[in-house]
Amino acid sequence: MIAVLRIAVCRPSIKVLFCLACLGAFHSARAAERTFDFSKEKQNEIPAGFHSAVSGEGKPGTWKIIEDEVSASIPSITPNAAPQRRAVLAQLSRDLTDEHYSLLVYTNEVFGDFKFTTRVKCVSGVAEQMAGVVFRYQDEKNYYYLRASAKGNTFRFFKVVAGQRSPPIGPEIQIPVGVWHQLTVETKGNQIKCFLNDQQAIPTLTDNSFTAGLIGFWTKSDSVSHFTDAHITYTPREPFIRVLLRQVRQNYPRVEALKVYSKNTADPTLRIMASTDEHELGNIASEVEPQVMEKDAPFYGKLDSNSIVVTLPLHDRNGEVIAALRVEMKSFLGQTERNALARAMPIVKDLERQFVEAKDLF
Image 1 (cartoon, rainbow, N blue to C red):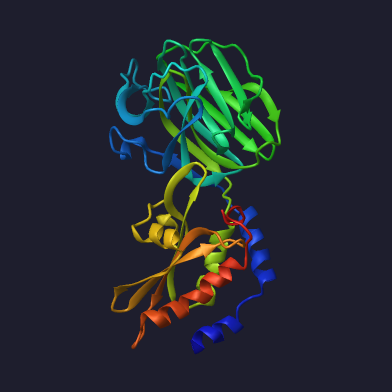
Image 2: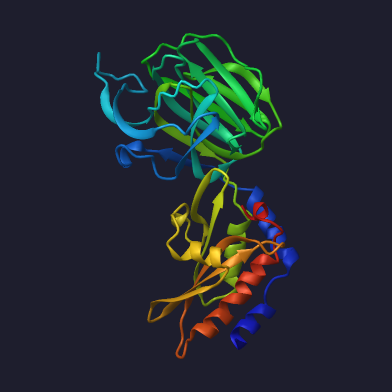
């Protein structure tokens, strides 16, 4: 306990922590990129990190990894080169409901400014033959989307606010069925650019409804659609909680690792939302974390002879449990559950003083 108190005296003030958090949360020196390689995913399953949702009426779509013939995105130097069979993402539900929008949303990261590109193919559909992307997604009633229609031969941008869809923006243009087309959306601040097959098909849009959100894939009604070659280049946005974890790690040298488990509006699964090891982001919780949150009680365990783990509930200012904090610490001779909790409790209290509600963290 003496060591904990000595460290607490040296802890930076709340104002300093808050300023550091703001700098980390909203500024980045370099761009990042991510490629969604469906060939590494399991066949007939939803790719890791994605959540199936539905906007409007009906049930969520049927999203799976399947194989399909994919032509080269860059013309081959070999004349008449045959398409290759590759793993692609497919939406296979044939729900004929008109106001039925199947979404597959990537929940591991929030994107603000980015360039998101994917190739889409409208395969079949009686009522509709559409494929598109959803971006700056908040929930199933608030987001932007860009889609191509093979049945209607249109390329259109929409926004959905409080469940109400805006009038369409975009041209009539040939979208042959069964052919791969490249869709690209680029955002910077409130500016949105929409491209079809590397051509800006819609004049630059200006809209202030959503400044950041999730990205994903979109279809309508009974559209069977395929997606491949998905890639995003973006300016990273760091959630406040990740900044706070770094500060805790610096202020408590005997802490080996920290993880925060929570949910978001797009995915009801309890996952790692912040960690001192970024490779763990998005991993699903064990049996311990849901029990800690449900019972509002800590958990103590031993990792090995040199390390212990304490998992505690994390509360908002109203006392509601919003997350579970896992603290892995170095052990010492005579380590007990009681003094392990005493070592971990100041950490969770420090975190709880930094925010009012869950949205401030995530």
